[in-house]
Length: 330
Image 1 (cartoon, rainbow, N blue to C red):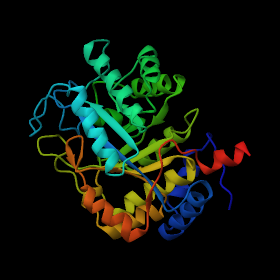
Image 2 (tube, rainbow, N blue to C red):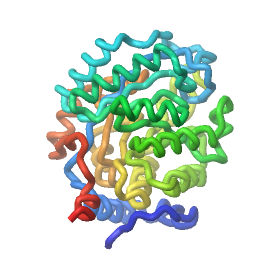
Image 3 (cartoon, rainbow, N blue to C red):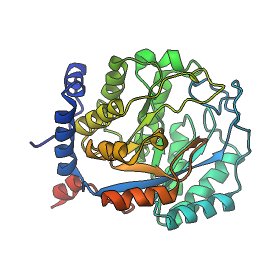
């Protein structure tokens, strides 16, 4: 079976894939994965919160929103040297992509943004893929980040357009898509996915995948997050997402966006080795390493090293061109 890259998927087609018998779905996703990627290779990324808490938005899942009473304390932007030291440590631990997250609604043209540009340059000089997630971006800000050496920008769409207003009211779905367009226009790699377990329906999950797969270009990276409920947020009592729901999301994303790095993201700390192995079988080929994802827990480096050894996985090198693009160059 030869898969093709398409940007005209219908909801009906995606639904049919999502609802396939789960073992057949995993098998088909594995075939697509091997067509476009090395199945033993996993991209290891590190995510650091460079500015924590105090966000004015009302994302119902997020402990960094100022309006919720959580254990997250507001912190100023970290010093540049501290961030670069963290990047060096991440590289030494095996990460090839370093992502910096700031709890901002949008980027403002001020001294803090100037400092972020310095951080981007510094991480880029280490030979790592450098990524940021800073909220909404204008086209001019995206260009400045590109000039500083930014490789990728994360801006998740979170859920379907229909369910979005149940989760966030302080910005629109269109605002998110506008930022993705500004990032894409600046020739920065787009990282965009979502979260399951927000009280959405299966149709909402299919709707989110439909939006991502019908963008003018598929995101280079698609994080699939399982909600980690945080006390003090509106979604604190949500039930845990099952491994089969994660597998269906990952496998469907792999089939409809075959070139993408599909990232097993938040929620991994609640999975055992066998459950994570199922996700890799279903087409996941990227993880976040380190004991925290911004403010939520994540497996530590030693645990992940043991996971890689047990499953015979190897870290993907930085700046690697996908197999499919190498074939196109020949």
